[in-house]
Each structure stands twice: as C-alpha cells, then as structure tokens.
Length: 335
Image (cartoon, rainbow, N blue to C red; front, side):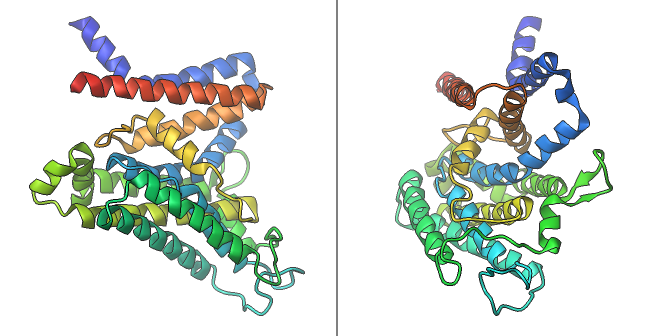
C-alpha cells in the first residue's frame, strides 16, 4: 500500500519533480546559473508565455486546440505598438496620431484578440468545424490581416520601434531596483494566472468547460448550452492572446508582423507537459504555469551552458512526445 501511495504521489507531482531536477542538473554543471538575476530573467521570459498557455488551456480542456494563438499575439503586438510611438520618432506608423493615453491602444488590442477568439468559437460551435481546421484557417487569415496592416503607408513593413516609455515600462519596469526587484510583467502574469484559476475552479463557466471536455454529448444532455460556453471560452482565450501581444511588444520595445510565430506550439506543448489532457476535461493552472517554466528553463538553461540550439529542439521534442504518450496511457487505463 505504501508503495502504491508513493507511486501515486510521484505520478501526481511528476512535473514539479522534473522542474526541480532540471534546475539541479543545470546548476550542478554551472553553479552561476542559480543566481537571482538568472531566475529573474527566466520569470520575465516566462510571463507572456504563461498568459498564452493559459489561453490555450481553455481550449484544450474543452477537447479542442487553437493554432491561431501565435498570430493573434503578433497582430495585437503590432496594433498596440503602432499607436504608442514617441511623437518625434522619424518613422511613425501614424504620423498625425496624437499622443493617446496608454490604456486606449492596449484596450483596442484586447478587443481585437477577443473578437478573433469569438470568431473561432463561432466557427467551431455553430458550423461544427473541427477546432484544428477552424483555427488553422483563422491562423492564416490573421497573419494576412496583420501583414496588410503592417505594410500600410508610410510604414510599409518596416519594424515598429520608438515606443513610448510609459508603454515599455510595462514590459521592462519593476517595483524596486536591482536583482531583487519585482518586474511588472511577472506580477501581471501572476494576477492573470490567479484570475484564470478562479474561472477554472470557482465559476459555472469553468465547471461547464470541464464537463464539455469530459463528454460533450453528456454535457449537452445535462442542460449545458455547449455552443454558448464554447463561444465565451474561445473569446476569453483570444483576449488573453491580445494581452500577451501587448506585453510582448512592451517587453521587446518593438513589433513586426512575425511576432508570435510558433508561440501556439510552445503553448500547447507547455500545457501538455503541465498535465492538460489532449483528450479534454483535465488541466490545472499550476500545471500549465509549471509546464511553461520547464520549457523556459530548458531554453535558457541549455543555452546558458552552451548546448546547441538544435539539441535543444530534439530535447523539447522528446519531452513533448513523452508527455503525450504518458497522457494517452492514463486515458487508456481509465477507458
């Protein structure tokens, strides 16, 4: 019995054990990795990825997938950055645009993300298009929209720079100074993770989300309006992608139409590694956050100790396959 309990405990906490082992292994190879400044950099790099992954988690838990997340990040990054350049910048996207309050472009970006998310939800719920195909189509369309916007005169596909300090401070500023300061972007990610945890665990929408992912037909028979709930879920996910795009532009101090490329795959991988089931109905916020941290530690840590980027891709691929295989074994055992 004790052995079974131990195995169960290890299985339940495997993702956290993996994260600790990764940190210990990299630190053993190069002790300077465990510096406060390094851990702070990891958290900063993880912040926007956490928000994207939480949006993707909404969709995965319903049994769907979202391939348009990265392109929504890119579009909203370009939109927010294009309206928040300093007035004397030589190549302003909108030369005659007055200096707006920083919240207005951010709100516009969030609404754009929300609307594209609702579009995904509408296609999936009303036309019964499989989420993979629906979001694949919107992914291509959103990139086209972003490229057209990015190519308008006088910008004509030039990288957007010269962003205002009140905007970039959101991505690079912090409470306090030095290596022990608290970055705003990390605090925002923590706040968003808490709100999403509340939605997952304390709201009717969250309960319906798990029910739909567990068995959509049973959820429909029990009186859940599946179409309406999917519409809200995809909309919320889109708003989260919009927020991530804004923060990414603020963090990097610029934007191009290629921002967010392949972010959706990293987010899906982080969710799966974090315990979100590919079959739907299972997933937690702490698991998603830890999954993102694991991939950030892999990227940052292996680069830190000089491992080739190509080996990093191989390692990430193996981790993803192993996580999905483990998930499918658990699903098969339940069946």
